[in-house]
Image (cartoon, rainbow, N blue to C red; front, side, top):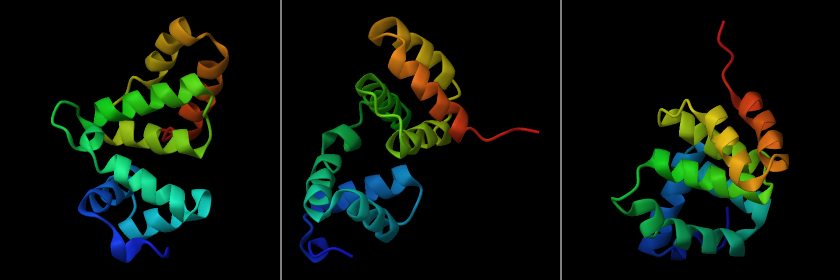
Length: 129
């Protein structure tokens, strides 16, 4: 898909695997999606970051990481498909407290962003019969 794929460092390869896992797709699909959205140069840097200790250290679980990313996104007003990816990751890792997380964030960052993010929580939830 992109010109940099053959020259990926080991750290970038680990980062690409993280994005694929987070998106719930294979690595080629993750790379295509990311490159379409952000461009090859940005993706190369994102892979390097995701290949490092933040996503590979032993002190955090993927649930912890997803909550951290969700909190950062919501605090920054990011409530689009980028948030949806991490809401899905949180759910795949057993998090059923996303509404409570938005309530907690409201206390610390104010109501506008978390209330808007609740739309994403509802939009991405799996409706139960």
